[in-house]
Image 1 (cartoon, rainbow over the protein chains, first blue to last red):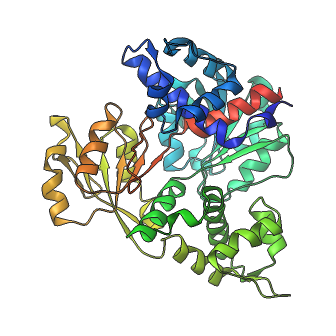
Image 2 (image 1 turned 120 degrees about the vertical axis):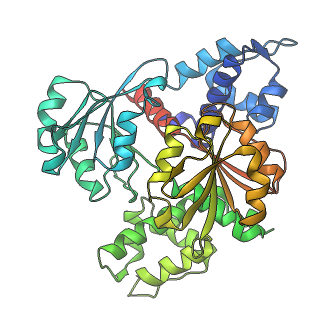
Length: 209
Length: 209
């Protein structure tokens, strides 16, 4: 596995560079110097060049970076040049929001099915996506290729984690309140909730007032 | 400023510990060994103890940690023992979702007002929260104390950033697609979008398949 090669912090910055490049492309900017790109990305240019060396992308002296081609290299490096199939676990308000909103679809992440454990939710359809009973997961996984399981359950998120892992899903985005971990190195869980960045801010405010 | 004392990675883990402790408290667990707590938090117990030394919380030999009191210490350390006032900038679907959902309120983060630039949105009310014109921000800030500005604009998020900073708001959660940065060290911006953790997963999948 090559995954360990790129340090986590570098990976996070590379994702930011990609987002900034997408914004620059929208503004019809074709070329950018490494100094200007670094400034837009909140780093210094030495850091930017060091990070981009992981991707193997080097700017041209005097011209800088081609926005389009650097964006392409980054997308490819980050696995974003292809589309990914998602399923959702737990029909919370956040879950319903994600099914209805096309925000993730635009970035290449497609929800194909949703799962819940409450009888009253089974059979509902959001944005064309059917809500199945969690115990139907094996049948659904038999028919469609699932890349990423997104957990949005408000209660007992671990039930969905277990079911997803049992069906061989190796990448999990956990948006529930409870952080989840597994010891199996072949499974990757990303834990996120809005209170994470907000708590970083509350810590900052408490200590800077 | 003391803010620099705690490394970013430690801070992130402390926030995870807090969430795990809140979940344990809900399950009516009073005491937990550092080994078990570490396991629940996805770290080893040496790491846990090292991180908790920043908070000044030490478990009792043979008893472990009191869930309630460690939770209390962490909340206090992280600035989560108090409530914070938020305003929202940009009435996107995500913005409306956050105004309507009480998910943040339960964690002590209260939206008091929302701002937009589109005339048709001004005066709308979500969950009791009024949408003002962005140019009314100075008057609103005169009346209420704003701690954190949350940017959910789909277009031109930098307009909201500039307006928020001009009104002396020092903590910004940017949920727009475009990462934003400022050089002023007295202002803290947290950039987040769902595609950040999803891209970490796509990178993992691409390299482990």
